[in-house]
Amino acid sequence: MTNFCLHCEGAITPTTPSTKCNGPCKKYCHLKCLKLGDSDMANIITEKSHWVCSKCVTASSSSSAPITAEKLEEIIRSQLMTIKLEIKQTIEDNFKIIKDRLSAVEENVRLIQDEWTEFKKSNVKMDNPLDFNTVVSEIEERKSRSTNVLLFNISESISSNSEEKFQDDLLQVNSILAPLGSFPQPKKIIRVGMPKPNVVRPLKIVYENDDIAKDVLRSNKNNNNRNHHFRPDLTKIQRDYNNSIRKEFKDKVAQGNTNVMLRYKNNMPYIVEKNISRGTHPKK
Image (cartoon, rainbow, N blue to C red; front, side, top):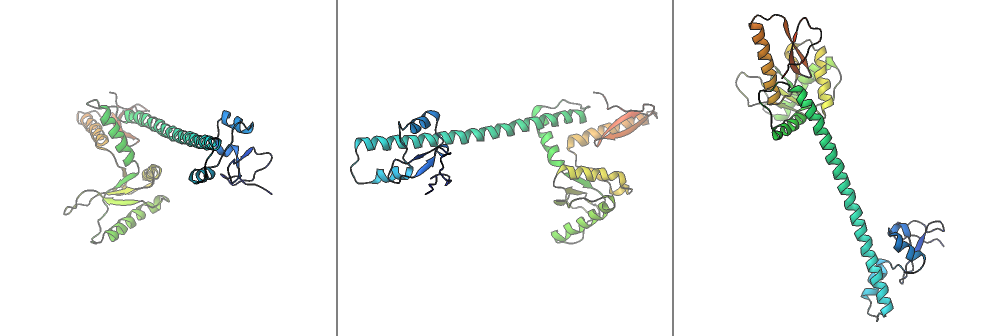
């Protein structure tokens, strides 16, 4: 007759070390399922101590029959072993949780370091140094905006129904994207700003992830309709920086400098000399 483990219900075999309950049930349990320490396991194997399952402990404790000193000692020892196992399991579970959380924190630190590196690259010319809290806030905002693209000059639906408005906007977006490639459907399409007479509000198109948004922005290379180019959803700091570079460029041209041109890298403008084959970003 095959016996089965009280814990995992697996078969008890000669090759799987096990112990039998010293209580009334006389059922078996794998030693590995008890998760005992080396000393406790050695004591059971050498029969210096006995194991009693929790059901038998409960039954013995609630029994009205007199309990001998030896039986009481056995019950106490078994209960202490059960408590010890529970504490050990709790510690192991908590250790795993802490380890997982620590790994998550380390990953977040790495991401922030990467974002900070990119942040410094794209903001090489700032009038005022940014404090730590502003930098962290800026990084988070850029991350949240990275899944968005903006589209201008798209006529607004005259419908008063929000779902119909969304479908009208989606139809126009898809008609522009169709010749440029195949793209997943956006999660949301939002009109930016409050409605104003004779003003067409831009569309904010929200995608599932930033990879899709980047692909849509790259499709501008094949888009011959300049009025319907997709734009990145920039933060205020990025917009201010872009405007400052454009103003600097216009000032140079206004001063008679015809040897400069404006180029873009990662949606950030920079000024280069026409006679220099490879441009450099503005210096601090």
